Picture: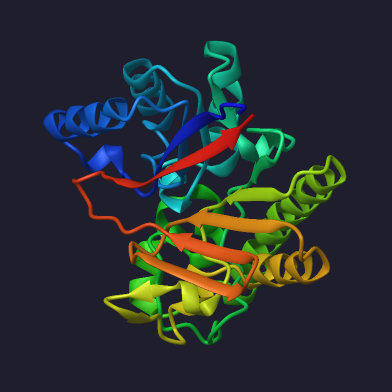
Length: 288
């Protein structure tokens, strides 16, 4: 009988290390290390734009295993998309243990299983985006968004965004770029005969995978907590490739849930709590 080797993966999301004291950080790091993982998966909101690189380096040194990750909206706070992207690309010069999937081709975990991913962003296509009565801190704390919001003072004086349509077009372009990347990598992984594909992203791809306080998010929050473009693409893949299993790992909502729109398409959303980072799941993949 051939003995199978097991690859162990720890997954976490929305750990917000910038909100943690050192004691809670160390407890979290030790918790990961106790599982002796072969890989750590992170699905965004790791820190903020000024501390993200140093927090990732600190984390990886402690757990001493490869880190596969994507970013969330909070990872750009107090900075810009371009600046944070530069820092993430620079991680390759610091250690080959970092894999920012937004800038990577698909990676084979086993002969059967591949991993793909992208930050992606929300796309304002579910729910009611205009006129929005729901405000995201992103629009005031990320440099790229300020021209659309007008800044916090402008918004609270006028009770409206400076350019709401421009903001929607901007996030939809970001989301589409991410979906284009994921689509290409899934196609390549399927061409390489992978029968299980793990997708890392930050934003849930379906309305039913956005859970807030035990219920599906309302129509005003849905635009900013889901990526319908990604959901539509995943549904097409799953329908066209019934012999392939698709598992999506994501976060953003802080509401834990598991949603399976098709028998071969499963979405897992991590629960989270500020200042208390926690493991969302421990996965095992087998390889002969």
